[in-house]
Image 1 (cartoon, one colour):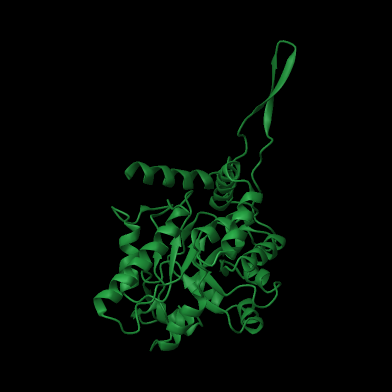
Image 2 (cartoon, helix red, strand yellow):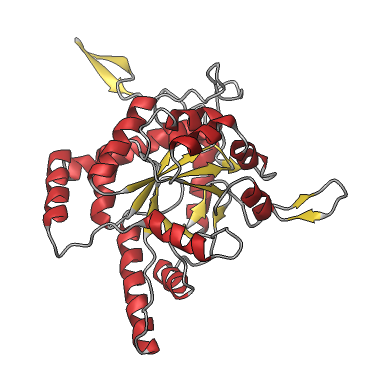
Length: 349
């Protein structure tokens, strides 16, 4: 476990290292400039009278997000080698037509129902993940089925399961494992309770770095009900394409944003393209969190988010990133509830 922690922490640090040690390049609108992976770089080598091109990893990522994207692209390429896209699409279509296969559940609807029943108008959605890239493992032993059983027994309306293996130590199989563990826990609790309304199985949001439709098909087959989409990692045309593919296979989209520009990208989509938007305290340049919590609060008060709400009245606005940990004070130095500030700013959970 310690070796795995060290590996991912070093990987994250290396992502952010530039040759000159400077800040990551940004566009005039303030967004990170991220390049897709270079696959044809190399150097010439002469052997006798033949000149060969030798592959050589010369490019270095300028931000944690860019490095994360390059590693994810490599990961998806390996998956494609085992299961080509055409075969995966065929498998997905067959699964969607098979009445014995599980169907995606209404993740956002479950959250909305819980919100309507809550007294404070604020819902907490638990997330299962092995580690944080900058700090390492979150638990000494990551027992996903045990965590899911606890989440199900506690009556959580929904949950998030991190399935990324590059930065967070997850796998797509974690989605399947979580769904099976939740169903088993609900059945067991129903049997112990002797009937009644039954225990609900919380639908699952798959948290990953989505760059290709290929990943959506894989997550659909794994049993995801919704997917998280990091808006800062994709261009506008890719955002449109990915949301359309997700809708086609029945997956709800929860868009994660870190800047007003990214919210503006959502406003260029057709209303209803995303089921919820998450204002995040994540810094995509380093992949660490804003420990003050100001970033999410700023986004909640932005004109861009107000426009999003107007165009998407049914979409929920959520917040993420140290929500239960951040400590804030008022002008007199007294403690202030950060969750309360988020709720006052318009976040639903």
